[in-house]
Length: 124
Image (cartoon, rainbow, N blue to C red):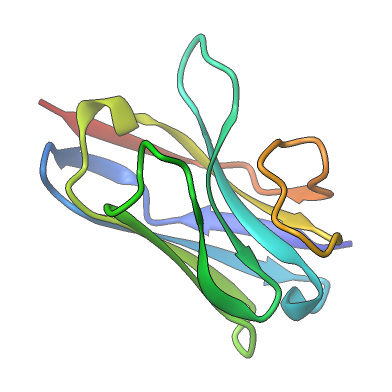
C-alpha cells in the first residue's frame, strides 16, 4: 500500500509562488500515474495536474495552465507541483494521488491512493 504525504502549502500573497511536494512510501512511484487535486470549501475535488509514469510535460487544468508545473523524480519517490502567479481562487486543500492505470485520469475516482492534503491560501 502506497502512503502519500504532501508538504509545502502555506499562506502567500497573490502573484506569489509555492512548491508543493508529495513523498511516497510503501511502493514504487514509477508504477503510478500521479495527480494533484484540490478542493475548496463547498466545492468538489478537481484535478489540477497529472503526470504519466515516466514523466513528461504533464496535463493541466485550463485554470492553471501556464502557471503550474507538475514534475516527478521516480528515483526519490517524489512528485512536485510548482505554482507560480498564484491567485486567490487557487486557495484550497491540495492533494496528491496515485493511480495504477496507464493514462492520466481527470476525475478523482480512478486514483487508488491519496494523501491527507496541504492547505494553500492565497491572499488578495
